[in-house]
Length: 248
Length: 283
Ligand SMILES: Nc1ncnc2c1ncn2[C@@H]1O[C@H](COP(=O)(O)OP(=O)(O)OP(=O)(O)O)[C@@H](O)[C@H]1O
Ligand SMILES: [Mg+2]
Image (cartoon, rainbow over all chains, first blue to last red; front, top):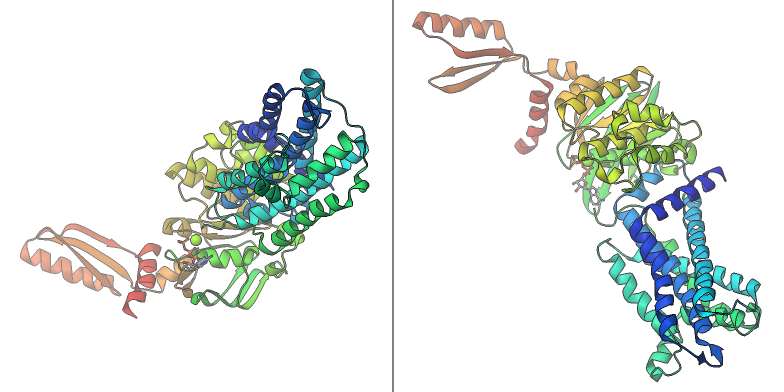
């Protein structure tokens, strides 16, 4: 426990100290929300556009922080032999990974609060009707996308292409899943593509808890898809994750 | 008492054998140097002992542990300088030391370690602003922070300027006097001669020389005589320097010549080393 707290504090220091990470992971989704919020007006499916966007950006934030951000930083750490160096200390691997995950949760929680704050401030966005379910859905999302982030770390071989490769996955996924606006008018092929992605189901859960007043257990299908993707990620990571640089 | 016992250690990568039956002991409190050309298997040996790599065969005992088990209790007692690794670019020297200190139950004082490795002036500098040699000193500091009984140093002074190298030697001697056992690899023969109680010379995965530097030097080729004749350097290696020298000077005196640039010297560890690793080509 002492080691976990120590590592969690270290991870927070490292995150906020690294300007690129803080801007890319923390500030960028907030910026995007404000931009999109000023463009979209009126209502979407009978809900205020800003509230729908807020839900979409929460989903994007989860994927951006727990999937892309986590994977980029872990690949960099592995390739610079930092992970290897840490393995020579008494810090247990599980404690380290738990602290990395907890640090990700903290960063995202702050981001979620900031998104709601900005939503209230500029766009009069609604507060969630089922806050408990929303929090559970967000935690489920962070866990599942972190699982995918660990898998991506295991699959990426070098730090050079890591950030580009992850964004090539992240941005289309967010677009197809409705992070940047409703997908109803997309061509059918794109909608079908979106229908297999975990982010689309996470956004469905967030939308239900935030705007429709439905508890998370009223959508077991969506919960199962999100959790399933997370488990696939963890299974890949368990087999392929390495602590030592891939490229010597 | 041995801190490290290695018996018939074997390791292959794919089809090629990196270690072909290596055996040695390192006593408690001893500084042991592992020498050998690039690719000889030094890092492979050290990383098996650190617990990073699996061995294919042989016995290894380090402080009573089998490093392959990867226990935290083992890592509590060792310190490691890897041949190549980076650190957090955005942390300061002092922050990095404190971060690593937190991993150990009985760490050394961070400021003390920063001082010991000569980074006091840089304690509040970001790691990314350090020079190559300063980063290496930081690596050394982090290896010391847990107050280890046993230190693994893989080329710890590569990239050091001569002053820094001497400072690092002093730090290593200080640690030795405190009873720390040290296994170090190096390409600097003077470093091995200065620091190591005993050295092993590895060549293509086999030990071809083992002993104190004095034994290695003493057990070979007597002395070396050099002089210049018609502008060309003549080198004589002899087991009987007195006799040879008497003959040379006698001839020179009789011919009324001067032996330009006359030098008589005992071979250094470097000469012996070059001899040991050169036999490879002959075979
Ligand atoms: N991870 C690896 N995969 C494949 N081959 C390897 C690996 N690590 C080392 N080798 C090979 O094993 C041999 C010994 O390498 P090692 O790194 O132990 O040498 P070294 O003595 O430390 O050399 P140097 O002085 O260059 O650091 C070399 O031929 C090297 O190419
Ligand atoms: Mg090496």
